Length: 144
Image (cartoon, rainbow, N blue to C red; front, side, top):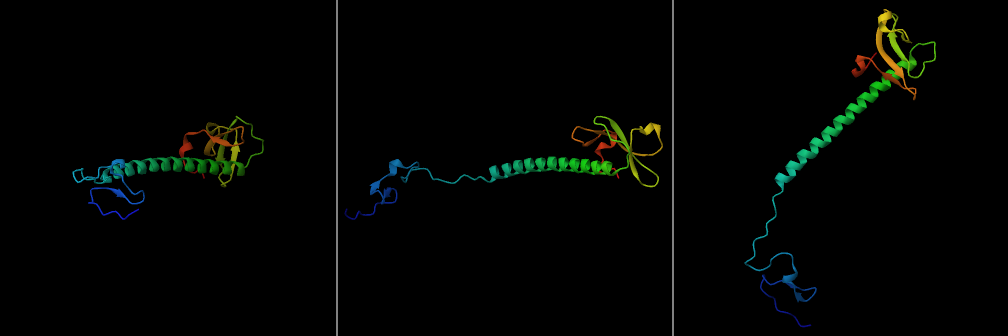
């Protein structure tokens, strides 16, 4: 093939295929074609970054709340299993946790209105042998 002479810029010549391929391109190539300018995506990005940040923050707060709830459950289960009691707790039965004057924690079936001990909470043992808090103080982080 002989050497082709250079054509003006508005004519698209593909040297690899040795053809004029302006008609095959997805954009106009002649000098009368509209100017190709990139779209300003700053507003779109900022809007979506804000939405994504809000969604991630919401999910984080939910996970944080679940973690705090789980840690509170761990704490009171640990406290109950280390408390004094001389009976085998029954699944589904409600028990009450108290603190003696000497600081010892004990578990009892006696309800808070039937005794004068420092009440720490009411709990029920579930099938998985996990203590579930029942009283109004359930939202407290710690019962120590």
